Image (cartoon, rainbow, N blue to C red):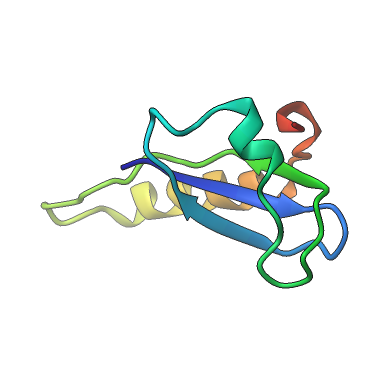
Length: 82
């Protein structure tokens, strides 16, 4: 099942939920509450795909992945607002 990241507009915490594709509807997402504060101002965050690395990875590749993750954490989630 896919994993989705959400952020709470009330307390700022980011949390993940595993939701089957058939259950993932706007009505379901609107019913999601923050597990930390119980807030309902939830927006979906970008969830990068899971990557399985089976070879030795160069330091240049690791630096690029680090840049991508830092950029992800800095970008606004307003475009994913529910």
